[in-house]
Length: 38
Image (cartoon, rainbow, N blue to C red; front, side):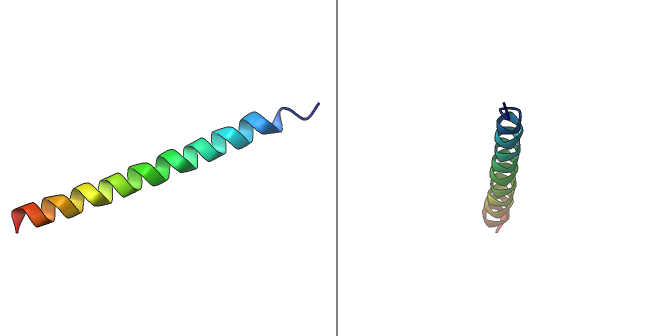
């Protein structure tokens, strides 16, 4: 009957995953841009 906790946990995990991927992608793009200019 506590299946309501599963969707919330999944949403939290997905949000953290997307946030980590977005942050890593942003850092990678910034690094590539700096190296490309230099």
